[in-house]
Image 1: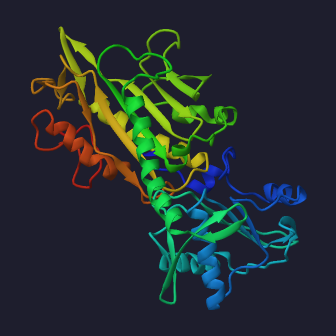
Image 2: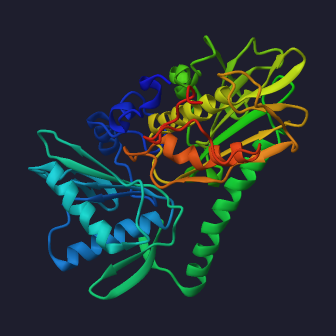
Length: 406
């Protein structure tokens, strides 16, 4: 597969291209607009005139603020913005000096002081003549509730409106239950997609591969992605073997598809308003009356679609944890071409109608070391084992997918 397809874009550079979700990249213009509008502090927005200093009190307050936001709806803390009566008033003449050093210092405090570890937090420094600002975006967490630790003590807190409260026993129990509920919601959404019950357009009859990327943000059903703004970048989700594509708005958000859009499609990608992304692709060929599932075509699609969906989530500014679900269905009566680049003499007839791969968890969508190959290889092994092979033979010694391997 082409290296340009395989590599994941730098999230900061990518997010500067667009800004259409609640965690879009911060800019000096966006910050100026927020202050000019006298924006109030909310459950997801807090202003701090200065950075946490090195005192025990400041470190404890910082851990409390961040964990409280993660335990609620996520949000942004703006260091360097003064507030008056709970609304943004002006820049506070903060001078960052070495922004990277400050980010490292604050990151280390979070690493040592919050359990479970937070994923997806993002720092953005903005410099201006009137004063510098360091913005900390905290995504809503899969692993909540988080507790902050300091001097041998720990507390569970959450942001309630613009204030922070310690969680009572009942609230703490509810927080643990809610975390489990979010995961169950994501699984239910995946089941609906995999059942093909709510497809925008039908896929060509026969085997179909379905892939869904579900960020945590999508579990609550809120609109995270503006389809009109996303439309400016729809071509990023065209698969390399489509030879082009088209787009259309729909109830779910935005669809990018291969085909004429009126008849059954060869494949399409659905960008949901909630931030989730689902990709569908037909997975069949016919040779001399033999109905075959071409394994390399399926494998190429799984790798490429996963990469493109992660890239698109980054473009939307979506951070934090996510889950990838992959499955194939309508398999009965088809042979699996395990070595289809070298003929189909070793193909085996499917004895089951659907295959579900294990859930693949992503701790942080902005992780630059994230590898689709490493993420998906256990699922590829399961797929090949379903047809009598010990493992998928198309991963090289370097752990990378190589469809040309025998």
